[in-house]
Length: 265
Image 1 (cartoon, rainbow, N blue to C red):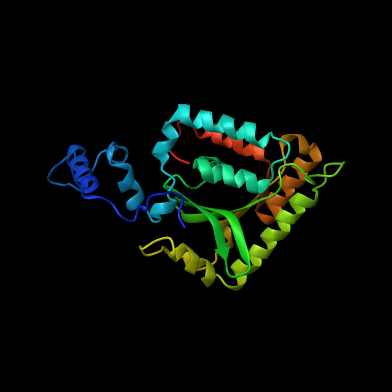
Image 2: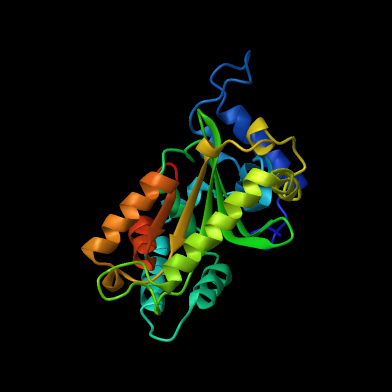
């Protein structure tokens, strides 16, 4: 159900000992051990950062963004892969899953103003019994939790038509998202139940009722060459009117490059 081979709901005795040591090393005033300096979060074991988050096995660790050489290598592999002529959207999702390059999807949050207090990624997220979102991103901020539902469509075929109008692939993605919106409005409890499967902690209020101002949607389809000025104009209007953003797969590369070395998603 999670993103990783390890279950971060369980931590070892060694990791607990290491955490305690880090707390002592990063507590400026021993009389107030709850006050820690800014180095505490980064110095603690990776497993502890996951374990103490709301969704341990779906947590996007910002420390991973500091490994610039590794991220650049995988970003290049991604852009080379999506340039292959016969791949489809399932191939791209398999690439991301097999190589644990979740930062590529997580980078979508750079287009929004949340996620800097915590970021999470869910794949194949169930919306009731009828629908599945390819990905759901959850970002925390001073304004609480907000959500991005992502639909991946074909990278090569039926993206736009001759004059730049949305083609079958983009229209299919938009229709899928409109179906998701109906579910969110009609039966939000099924969304709450799905999130509960991924945590043993109490969910915040934002996970119990549908507030449309906290929900955003993304269709990813095609490549840069498929998009004309008219396509971008239609995409801007769609985002303004419906909170549905239309991106191509090379946009994800651009965003994934931007987050390298960043302190947050």
